[in-house]
Length: 457
Image (cartoon, rainbow, N blue to C red; front, side, top):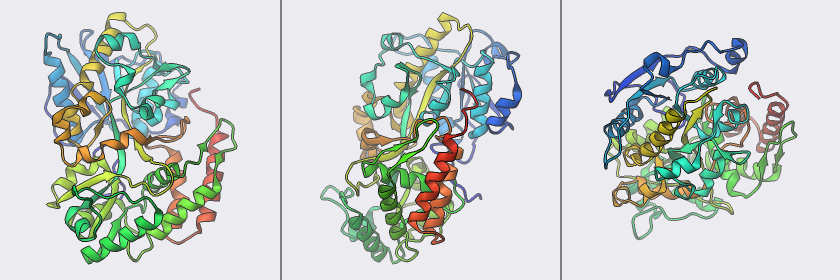
């Protein structure tokens, strides 16, 4: 098994799924933005809609495994129609997650004959909207189908815009959170009267919680897998840094505007927390997941997308938004969103159907929540059925204080930016460099990326 974590919000293993309509799983061998640059004009790209029949609404996504099966269920529900609403004929194409997915999406949009609707991590939007690779949504049209701006948290909705127009509609929020063994946490004195994790409020409280959990379990306190991973240390750093209230701005052309003192403060806490004694500092992703699942640690810092796996562990499982330990509440997240890939001459009727489809899928997101994702569409959170989901409802508040990657073309889920930020952070956790040196290297890496031109601008 690979030591790398699955992509944020994307299952690591693909499993067979049911077929609500035409469904195609494509293994895309292309990788990296270089493929886009080398391809030249793409006017010969075949539209998925054209290939499968003009009547079918063509949808691209990257949801495989358990998420893929849930999306099948949601598509099946909207395809049948309900409450007097007409159904859909959906031609769903599933591509492998990663640079290959985003390259394929960019190539089809550059050709002007893309799918009607596609999934995109919201953190990647800044690499697509400015270059005209996705088209803006018509908010009046969405409102006809019961979806408006007020249905989303400002923290997430604010990232859907480019130059005043909305280019993405969030399906979910998938945060970096903490899972904990309720029995161990109770023994360690970390639960409130309702059996939920008590607020911590300071770095020292988090450090003490690790010690108390280690004593309660007889093993490790807090588990975190990062070795050889290209995103984990960045997720931890980014959430903690946002809690300091400091700006992390990457203006085009540079230099980066990063508060070095705040960053050193964060990395110092990370090295104190994962000291190799109370809490291991050298675990890979799957090692940390396995250790927590088998009761060898009281808490694990993971993405909520691990909930289906952890529910099989037999632990009395609790979960909470990432603890606030600095001055400001903030939780590192991303969001699976829907976009309208650019089409040179979109058919107005199909565009209307694309808007209706997105609205109807959002209303099915209670199904999506069963995998751990927080529905971005707030009316679903207000349903009693969501409140009954345990432990999902206990970390729903993370969406209110969501923090995503910087809005730069080179940042976002699966990006080289995350990889380059992780390398110095990982060195600091392993004791190979100091927090000060790690932060200076992060600033240099960010500056290098800022001086590179956007290949699709």
